[in-house]
Length: 452
Image 1: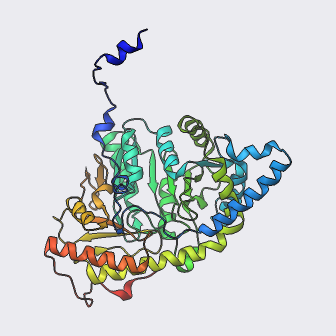
Image 2: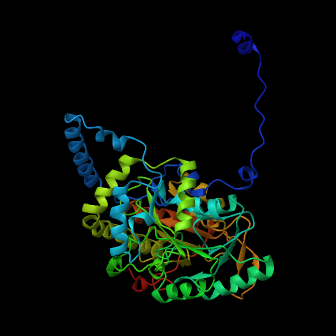
Image 3: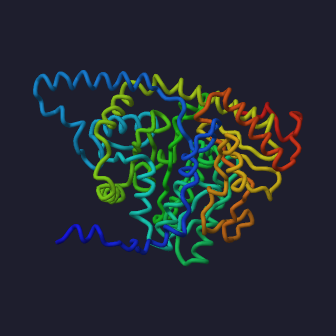
């Protein structure tokens, strides 16, 4: 073959047909915002309180041990730098199984736990293994966009249910199931919920509501509960040590997929962990083998030591830091943002804000805000692109995506920076909307109502 002729020949552009979802689904709004670096970043939930010195200490411990292995010419020194088991390292899974059983009241053994590359991978893998186009997923309204878009990519039909300041309202689950059976001729396959300080609103389910959800869903043997416990460790005050998940009621590990992540309680090492029913776990391990073969052995070694020796020393400091940031944002919202509604979380990373003017479009406004050094996530991103909603009147309608909402993250910046950034955001909103900023005596905004 004459390579020179090929190089000299003018090549026509590549023409490919892409899968439908590439053009029909938008890029994640959070991932898009990460391209910008505004001074006041209230966008994605970047952890801002990280035990860096602890991780330095752990890495130094590992390196010291490896130096001894090198001197001994032991092949074990290769283990942390090599491929590992798809389901995760036995060391990390053992530590997590003990902790989940003791602290989170989850009935499990080491074989029940699997490690994934972030909890995002397990969320995708569950839907990848269970969803065929047209299958139905129930979730709250609004809901975590990192779950919604991948589910829609796989052809799921998303049905959103009403929520309030206490999170998902259980009474609408039975209503939704009946409406799905009537309108679509099928029972929902998954109920997805974040019981602790949910993303995006920051709401937490009460013990009563958890029990109601269990009583309703366990009445159907073909609905899986996906419990996303990403923020379980970031709970403020006394409730920080009072974790009672839905999974606590799944005594035989048959009905609930329990998911969590190291990102919020350690650092963004891209390690998620979960306890899954046996058949689903085997399917997930197979799927993960296709995705990325295995997660990093070195990172898993760091986290195994962190969860075994250090996490309970660090968590009180981490929680206290995020609580201070949450309070700073709540007070700044009261003092500076235009009249509207905002959630009052007792944990997690986020506050949900809605302008009183329902015609205001936070998606159109966000670029102006970024240009002035303030980033947030428009609330419309937390609704399905083409789903349905169960209304408060128990009717099934096409899902509407309100434009006047935003998610504000307080996890990254210091309390001082948060106060300045929210003040600037309030000024920008006031200039844009000509809203009247209410006085602190307003019955809607009441500092005494902040329960942190």
